[in-house]
Amino acid sequence: MKLFEIVAHRGVPNEAPENALEAFQHAVKLGADAIEFDVSLTADGILVIYNYFYLEEITNTSGTIFNITYNQLQKVKVINNQNQRINNYRILTFNELLETNDDQIGLEVEIKCPKPESVEIIGGILNCPNNVFYIELIAI
Image (cartoon, rainbow, N blue to C red):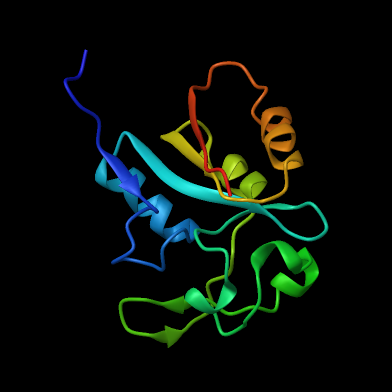
């Protein structure tokens, strides 16, 4: 048994913007035991990986993540905090991460959403055998 685990907070954000698929893939390459990320629901109920309530924190758009639809979100450009440049990265959906993860690394999920149905949606998605998930619910 390990004495401790290495958890890549939002992936490896010095290699790609935080929470980008590439940042998570780099954590796998480095041998991290898990990745930590926050999820929220869009206005149309799509679960996305995004750390902040406000889009202007790391994108070229303003407003709240939970008041924008997934289609609108596809046009949003992510800004790399390391160099403040807009790039081709986009906000990832929770399902996309699960599809690409293929049990390569543990997942620590933090729910950051004022919509109570987010817990039920995540529970439905995570109802799969052979996985261990750590879920932290942040009350708003």
